[in-house]
View 1 (cartoon, rainbow, N blue to C red):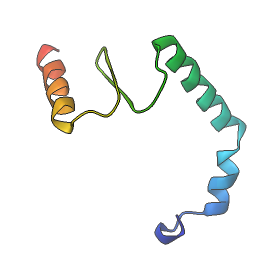
View 2 (cartoon, helix red, strand yellow):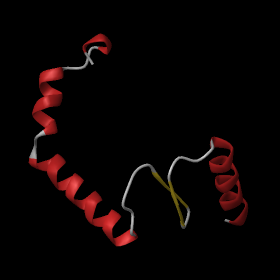
View 3 (cartoon, helix red, strand yellow):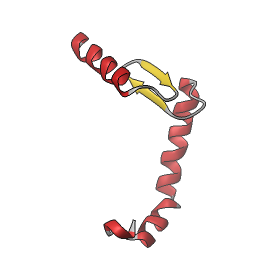
View 4 (cartoon, rainbow, N blue to C red):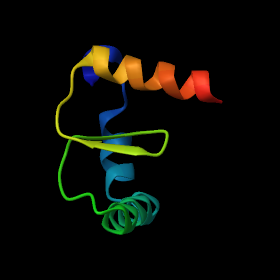
Length: 69
């Protein structure tokens, strides 16, 4: 972080803020509602894709969604 001139002390302060705790809790609740139990998970359109997937597969799904919109 220091190499790219990020204020490390500010990052640490914000990491432990109530705002970040709230965002993380909301993400956890959404993951639970969607049945997501691990990482990585990709949500593309209405599809939930668990696990590591090939970039070409992701691009194909995005293309299909764009074509159908």
